[in-house]
Image (cartoon, rainbow, N blue to C red):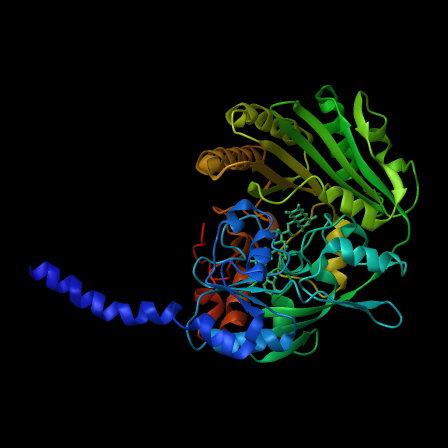
Length: 496
Ligand SMILES: Cc1cc2nc3c(=O)[nH]c(=O)nc-3n(C[C@H](O)[C@H](O)[C@H](O)COP(=O)(O)OP(=O)(O)OC[C@H]3O[C@@H](n4cnc5c(N)ncnc54)[C@H](O)[C@@H]3O)c2cc1C
């Protein structure tokens, strides 16, 4: 009895706070933003939710969606959400895999896909891009001007999330990560104030946004520095798995080449489906219209090949074709592990991945791929000359290998099981890399798993700086507590 009374008192004390978290948020937003706020079952709401990439994100139903069209809309929304302690999520292209990254159950999802402009400056050396724009459309606009930006590889992926998490594209060796090329961020702070962060104004924010993701405010415009780019060569070659030994040797030599050809971008994939079994898929990009780049010859000569889509084309074509391989509406799990480029480690990595395929072979619709991406000194050179970033990467002469899992399957019923296998695979890769003495703690935020902490992986100096900066511009921690999705600088538990 005494216990029941205590529980009742506690509930009475707690309820007004809990109710205050959710009640009236959407209604107050509607008063300010009118028809830009949409509710479940409306066409605008359904279209926004259906356009998330992963099924996990599509299954989350916010109380309302704010379809922002301008910085003013975002600022007005924050002036409501902050003081009312409303829970919210921020979404640009909606391509983060993890549930709750950019959508929120029973909260407010701010959809930035209407912030989709691409405005090149008159001499084309700079371009303003809205966070809701997608890379395929960015490349299409810029290809026509003979310039580009080093954004994501797949056409449908969003500019906002990619760029705030670093952003690793085909031509990072020509210009660095996407974040290294931002000269100005327009940012709405927790209290609705709009600031323009550049190297000389709000320089701490400018730096924090180069990898710090969504802990500081909502970015409503990026000014990118461009680099010259005309016609290119690229595409995919699918190979029989019997080529694996020669592939790994070629990958090791390509990545450790002291005269690395900075026109070249490569993704090397171990790809598995139960129907076809294991394959090797190399995705090539070359920043010139050379149909036979010498730097890729060791790969291109390998036989037997299954198919070949390489061609002289444009970055837009390459990114649109790449995007077709990753359709919306499937369950998705990713992780990221990094190690120093070393042939014995690469060989062991293949063995570990190959034996993991039998653990997922019965999962309906499974596609189980490990992508190896070279991080070479030419990339961090651009970071250094463009004012650095918070990623904390130091690249040895033989290069680093960024290893990314992509697991795609049909049903949430299999999520826990596949997640466990993925977690074990990641642990095994890390353990092996440590045994070989090649482990690197860097976790690419754009592919981080639920169990990973990419921001902590940047190192204690970056973490301290990011936490200081978040506290300075968001002293009450609105973006830490009311916006729980994504990877936070205070390492909050995510909505998974
Ligand atoms: C098919 C595919 C291909 C990919 N290829 C690449 C690649 O080549 N290179 C690479 O680096 N990554 C790549 N990624 C990973 C991709 O960069 C991340 O998934 C990224 O989060 C997507 O950005 P988005 O805007 O679409 O995501 P969203 O899901 O909209 O957002 C991701 C996170 O960023 C936050 N965020 C988004 N916009 C803003 C904003 N304006 N202000 C504040 N916070 C914001 C969100 O709150 C969320 O936490 C790929 C992903 C997929 C699915």
